[in-house]
Structures are given as C-alpha cells and as structure tokens.
Image (cartoon, rainbow, N blue to C red; front, top):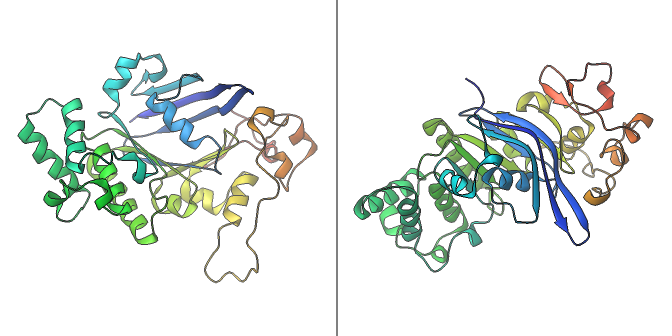
Length: 324
C-alpha cells in the first residue's frame, strides 16, 4: 500500500514588513494509512506551520511551494472550495489549546451537532445521537449530560477529548494533532495518547503528531521527523532513532532528556541560539551550535544521506552516497 500523504520539498514563507520569513524549507516525508508520524523540534522550527499548510489554512501573506499529495492529489492545486470539502471530513486537526479552540458561548453538544450539520447530510435527531456517540467514543463519562455542558464547565483534559471527538466525528483518513498534550498533567496526557492510538487502530486513520516531547514520540509514533530552523534534518523509525541518532541535533535533543537514576548534576543543554530565519548562516544551519562541526559544514548545505533507518542531512555521513 502506497503512502496516503506525501510531502515533496514543501516550502512555506511569509511576507513581512521586515522581509521574507522562510518558515518551512524543503521538507519531505510520507505518511501511510494507520501510521503515526511525529514531527519534533524546538519552538519556532516550523512544525505547526507545516500542519497548517496541509489544511490549506495559511494566512494571505504566505507563499507555498512544493507538493502536498493526499491520495495522489496535490492539495496545493485545489481551490478554496475543494479544500473546504476536505477539511472536517477527510482531513481534520486537533489544536494545541483546548481552552481557546472551543467556542465559550455554545454548548459542547451544539458545537458537535454544528460540525455534523455542515459536513454531513443527516436529520437533526440523528445528529444528536451521533454527537452522543462521539463523546462516548472518547470516553467522556456521563456523555449525555455533558452534551449540554459549556466549555468552562469542563476540565482541560475533557476539553481536549471534545476537540478529538470533533476531529474524528466523520472518521477522517488524516488527523493532524498539534501539541495535543500541552498544558495537561501526566495522567491526562496518557489518556489522550491512548485515545489517539485507539483512533488509529479502530479507524485506520493516519496521524501526524506535532510535539516537542520526545517521551510522547517514543510512546506513540512509528516514525519521526526531526526539524530544525524550518528544515527536516533527520527521519526514520522511532526506536532506531532513539537507539542510534544520525544527526548531531537529534543527539543533542536526546541527551537533554532527564532519566531516572541519572547521576548528572546538570542537564545537558544545546549551546547557542536558534538562528534568525531571515538570516540563516551558510552551510548547515545547525553548524554554529554543533560540537561536531567541520569546515565543510559552514560552507555548503548538506544533502540528504540515506541510511538503513531513514536519512539525515549531515556531512559526517559524506562517505555515504547522497540521495538528494
């Protein structure tokens, strides 16, 4: 079975008063049906922008290039009307802040029924019953009573479940989850992760999980894409990347994770700062912060070097054959 989603050299830049800001630069990866791919990187690396580009909801000052193939069709070539027909039905998104993503003046049931009214042709009584089923599917207790609750009457974890219910109300084939466990305590985080796994298993939905939490990635994702300064620097199967990272940035991220029984007095930090996206250094963008930097790294942007697990953009693999 081929990929459900394929990004080919995706670029996203924004026109600003201070010049052009390249937020995503040449990102490529695939997603198969029923697969969960994690997008990992520091804040500002382009993770959320990438997801917004897939949904076609970028602001008017955005310039997009490359290809976003969904079941073989390039989403970037579709009209606004065609994208509206896909969003909410085939492609859905769970936003990172449930406190602001829900409308405070409408009940939870009313918001679920509105999604069904807009995207599905079904009578009102059926919409009510379907909304109840959606809350039950995401394990909200006393679901019938909760339908009449307003967002402020629910906890953060319950609101995140409601957002997930909305996103999966029409059994989408692609779910984009943008930091779905942010600001939730560890117990609720685990519940949300189990819920995403259940959705993948029951519906065969492909999921892109945006996060900066490597623990979440290892717990849930089949593959991972590591991003830095708008660029994908490494990708591969999750367990193999954790066992043997091929890019110094990935190594640095993994080294910064605290571990039980670790006798270090201080956590390992990545030295330096993320570069200004408007003024990226020549060569490898991670070179100024990289402990393995070579002269070549500061001169030429590294190509994609394939390995047994995936690929990495790093000159330390220069003896291997580049594939891009």
